[in-house]
Image (cartoon, rainbow, N blue to C red; front, side, top):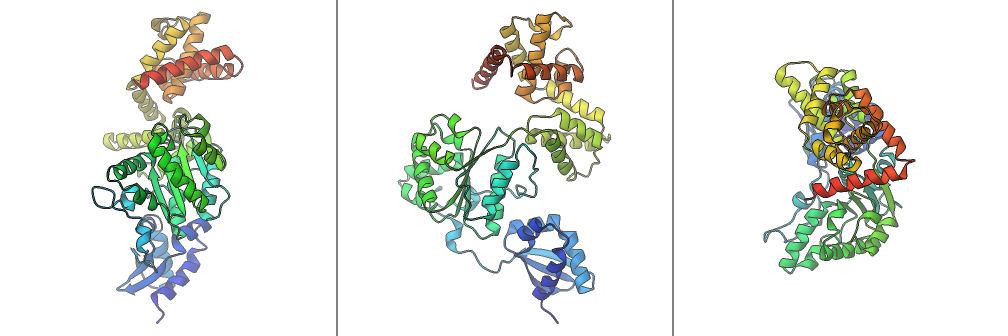
Length: 444
């Protein structure tokens, strides 16, 4: 009778023709057959994350394949039982936290769902995705360091953690941390007079993933420590990938040396998602819910919610939860109701309208009224533009707040101002001052 591993090799041969090459190499290639007893086939995987992913995503396919190979009804179970045991050095431990240890569970919390397979690729992020995939698969990539930047909720952290998951599958020493965690650990090491020990724990890495570097900009001592770690790792051939909320040159107080090092590598931006990417994201997320979502409802969500992926997912979760509670079916009308409720709870609307009112010398009452003189109508269109860019709310929601104007009217106003600011520099500066005012008020 053949061994469990021999049986699994045959099953892998069939599975290789049924899944994508990327999925096979990432999730199945390093697995092996452990045992087959009482109708249960046990598959060994190199990590708990891989076992969990296979259980959730490929359980039925693997079960069907094994049943065919063994010619008997077979259940399958995925366990953590790698062929090699990680060495103590791979735990990346040091005695810095609360007199105990800082382990990967605290400084390196990769989220299970943040993989390349679950990342939606579009023209807004294709370069960042391609370079991230390259450094995950190639230990000697020329993209070193890689710096990915963009506004919140666009997928920077997702890509960074996807690199970590894929690189670990290839046996590389990986550490993911955020600038905030790095700062906390560094401050603790200074208090305990163990800075050298803190720095030493990074030296064995082949890949450092560092999230939200802008957080270090005003922390001189922490920034200096990070630069020395960065410099040493880079000289030793360690791949470094970082994220930030803006281009390195726009992060004030980052430090000329560090900025220069970052810009010497690959700098890739993630832009707000275009309609096709938003729709693809919603379609993919929609399959995770048991509630049927009509294509026209998904299309309306994709058209109206333009802020970022996080807002899209939040709208989808709210919509499906509301539907389950009320028993109603999802429709374009329920989407309209959701978008309206989101806008009505948004306290920024009145602040924005007041800022436009002051800048264009048009009263709030007139902005919300039916007055259509040239001055009032244009100020109202500017308000539509700024409400859209500042809040990311739908055209329908903005129209509701601006005197129950319809979707088409708001869309026209937004596009008119958007087109004009590229030609009218005076208007662009005026709108820029409003944005600056709103940003400063948020920080108070």
